[in-house]
Figure 1 (cartoon, one colour):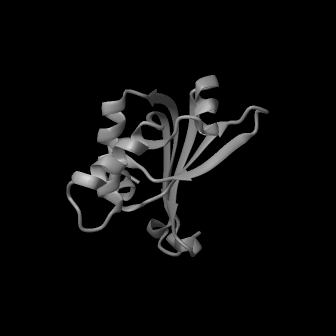
Figure 2 (cartoon, rainbow, N blue to C red):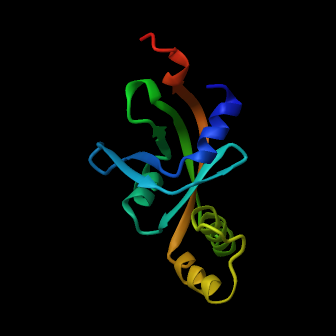
Length: 147
């Protein structure tokens, strides 16, 4: 995929699988909701989660966003990245609003009780920004039936 096609694809899909290195050296793989900011994948998770502990130990991660059921439909983007933990409360809260708007149909702002609920969540969470080091992509729809 071209860079533009990759960004389009990332904007359409909803789940990123994030692999970090667990405490025994094995991959720790988790599906997460995400937001694309300036071409980077951003997620949030609980500050005490295994993902966070893994990133504190080793900031390398591999991300996979993929789609398709049949071979000729398969598309995806794999990103090797350096992970940065963002812990500042206001940044986490702002991200929470952005993520919620992306995944909640029909809303374009977070106010009142909903904002208070997100503030309560934000106090327990961190944001992870993935700085891409290497990206690979594929789109089997472009193969035209020849494999």
